[in-house]
Every structure is written in C-alpha cells, then in structure tokens.
Amino acid sequence: MEMKIVLDLIEREQIPECEPERQYYFMDIAQRYVKQLAAQKGSPLTFHVTTFGCQMNARDSEKLIGILEHIGYVRTDTEEADFSVYNTCTVRENANNKVYGRLGGLNNAKKKNPFMMIGLCGCMMQEPSVLEKLQESYRFVNLIFGTHNIYKFAELIVTAMENSFLAQPSKKGSRMTIDIWEDTDKIVEDLPVERKYFFKSGVNIMFGCNNFCSYCIVPYVRGRERSREPQEIIREIERLVADGVVEIMLLGQNVNSYGKNLKEPMTFAQLLTEIEKIEGLRRIRFMTSHPKDLSDELIEVMKNSKKVCRHLHLPLQSGSSRILNIMNRRYDKEHYLALVDKLRAAVPDIALTTDIIVGFPGETEEDFLETMDVVRRVRYDSAFTFLYSKRTGTPAASMEDQVPEHVAKERFDRLLKEVQKIGAEKAGSLTGQTLPVLVEEVNEQDATLVTGRLDNNSVVHLEGTADMIGTIQNVELMSCKGFYYIGKAVD
Ligand code: SAH
Ligand code: SF4
Ligand code: F3S
Image (cartoon, rainbow, N blue to C red; front, side, top):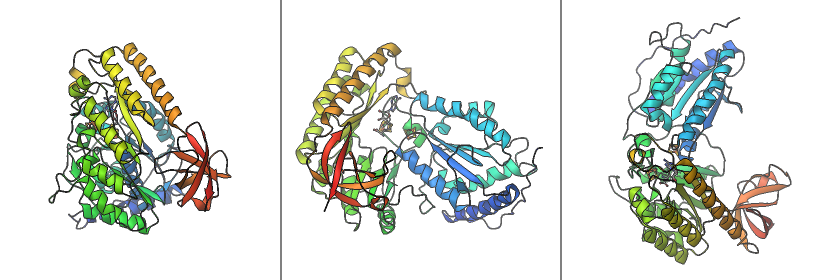
C-alpha cells in the first residue's frame, strides 16, 4: 500500500534579507518540516552525504552535514537514507560516470521509501550538459544545486520538501528543485558546520581559482578566486582551538595567491605568521600550492615556524617545459627544480608530494621522459598520477594531437612504477628518530594499536588506547613496514 505523506505548509513571515540570519530562519522552518515527517514515519529521519573529489568538497560536505544535523536529521552509514546527498566532482570524466552509475541504485531505494529525498550538488552540477541530462533522464532527483549557493542549503531544503511533499507542488508538474548560479562573490560566514574529528579540521581560506590551466575545469565550476578576510579565518581557528582542535589544514585551490583581492591585500606567508600566533594550535597544514606563486617569503616562514608542518604538496603536472607552457602553468622545469632545491635547503626534512598528468595533448615520448626525469631528481615521498581526461569547455579539449589511450596508459604505468619505487625507497628514512606524532584513531585491524601522523604526514602505528586520540606523543620510530612506521611512545 502506498503511504500518503501530508506536509502542512508553514507560512513565511518577514524573511530576513541578511545572511546568515536568513539561513537560520529557514533552518527553523526545515526543522519543523522534519518533525512533521518524522512523526508520520514513526522514527527520526536519516541522512547520508557521499563526497566525491577533493578536500574542498570534503569541507563543503561538513557544511551540509552541519545543517542537516541542525534541522534534526540523524546521520546513518548507508546511502539509502531518508535524505541522500551526493556532493559531486567533475575534475575527470570518470568522476561523472561514477555518479550516474550510482544514481540508479538510489532510485530503487527511493521507490521503497516514500520519505526519501535525493540531493545532488558540487562541481558536476555547474556543467550545463550535466543538468540537461539529469532533467531528462533522472527526474527522481529532488534537489539540485551548485557550488556557489551551498550556503543556501537550508532554504533549498525547505523548497525541495515543499515541492516533493506538498499536495500541489509549487511548480506545476515538476517535483525537482533546481538552483544553480554561474558565479558569486559572496562569502557567508557563521553557518553550522560538522566536525569529523574533534582534534583537527579543514579551514577554507579562499574559494575558486583564476589560473585556467588549459586542462582543468575547476575555474569554470568553482568560479573566480576570492579570499576570506583574515579576521574571519583567525576567528574560526581560535574557536576550533578552544574546542579542542590542535591541527588545521588551510584549504584553497592555490593558497599561495591568498589575499590578493582583499580590501587590504595580504600574502599567504603573512596569514600563516598570524595563524602561528594562535595559542594552543600545534600544527598547520595547507593545500594546494601552485609553483608559480610559491614565494621566498613563504619558504622563510616555513623554515622558522614551529607549527607549519614539514610537508608540501607541490603539483608538477608535467616535467616538460614545452607541455607546461601549453598547460598554461606559467613555470618551467628549471624553475620547479630550483624551487625544490630552495625548499630543501631551508627545510631539510621536508616531505614533498605532487600531482602529475600523463597523456596531455601533444605529449611526446621525449616530453614524458622529462617528467620521469623530474620524478627521479625530486624523489617525491608520494605522488598522485592521473591519465589526462578531456573536459569539455577547456582549451585542451579542442587541441589537436590527443594522445592515443594505449600510449598514455603505457606511460602512466611506467610513471606509477617509478613513483612507487622511489616512495618505497624513501619510506623509513626517519627510523631511529624520536618525533612528535598526532594520534588520530584506534587501529582498525589491531585494537591494541593507535595510528597517527608525523608532521611530514607519514603514518605511525604505536601501542596505545583510545584516550590518546587527539594528543601529540613523542614517539620513537623503531621500524618501517611498507609505507608506515612502527613506533613506541616515550616520555
Ligand atoms: N588546484 C590544485 C588541484 C586541483 S585538481 C592544483 O592546481 O594543484 C587536482 C589534480 O587533478 C590536479 O593537480 C591535476 O593533476 C588533476 N587534474 C585536473 N584536471 C585534470 C584533467 N583534465 N585530467 C587529468 N587530471 C586532471
Ligand atoms: Fe585547476 Fe590549475 Fe586552478 Fe589547480 S591551479 S584548480 S589545476 S586551474
Ligand atoms: Fe573535483 Fe571540484 Fe575538487 S571538480 S577536485 S571537487 S574542486
């Protein structure tokens, strides 16, 4: 028997115009709707957020979860929840395919659960062709929004609930709620945000990207670069620290160009110096750094800082100056290698990681060997390697000389092997030393062990108990197995 859901419309009075007040107003309405639905269901409504993509998306998901919890949804481990949200990524084609593939499963779950809503957001939604396809073949999706209006989630939920559950949907004939913006210059502060770990947290320092690397879709789906005010960032971190956080990860597509568009411009190095002063904060990480904007000033701050971790993720993309030029990266092989030398001279133990793309249009065997050369010279601790993926709308997509798949794949395999070989050789280089480890969790396989990280991001297992989570221990690194250390806490 099909269950009939009755939602009593809550009338709006004097909707606040300012943010974040407006969103708190809608959270209140959403909370009342959730109560109405839960009463009919006879149990609390559940939610699940699935994150695809990068750390930026992961942080956005924490914002979605913060709001869902605030309005009374209860978290569950399964995607087949009363509200299932996919926060999508579109950086490579296979990211999109994954989403389409899994939506069918969600639809089956929805057929069995009249309370279920499906939401889609994130980078993929910013592509017009995706929206067209969803409108045509995925009519069961309740709510679609993009990257620029995520702060309006509460308001969007209210509209989606009314469109989905009121007897007469406000838009006749359609129960889909769609709101996608092309761009925004707005940054809304002080909305609820979930904390996955009590001892560490990501902190956005900027949004968007202005670099337009010729293969990359991010500037099109995340909009222009805009920095948060330093006072807002410091205030957020101070609150987090008061709440038990000891490690933060500053997030942006290119943190090295932080502050350029502020009313009172400020450099990333200056921001780090300010954050360093926050008492109680122990570790500062950041990502991602673009080699073209990595300044001497920043290297100096990293050298002198007691809190900035000795790890840098410095995407190379290609070792060939010719390809880097066509990629619009605005540095060449020599500049990159010189940067690495400078970094290592200033911070000798620094761990270096990178991103590399294989098979960019026009890449020859010679170009590829340049990439291998940089990999061998820099000797990365680890590297993310990607097969070039054609993204419609980017300049590279219409370049001639697309590299045949089998050629790219063969190069990819060679590169991966080299990266792994070097990574394995480098692992364990700190064995014998005693170093601080931030304990993060009880080991999944062996409950007598806890697992944590060195400031260079290496993983360490040591004997311990759950009460050590969130503390920084001095650990003697006794041996190295594969890519992680076995250590012993010492006083
Ligand atoms: N802003 C960051 C990274 C953003 S995307 C930076 O500039 O480093 C993460 C990584 O995905 C990139 O570093 C790049 O290596 C990879 N990537 C981006 N577009 C791609 C494409 N079209 N095909 C394959 N890999 C891509
Ligand atoms: Fe993409 Fe380049 Fe911007 Fe990174 S810097 S997000 S690779 S355009
Ligand atoms: Fe993907 Fe968007 Fe991040 S496209 S990599 S989730 S910025």
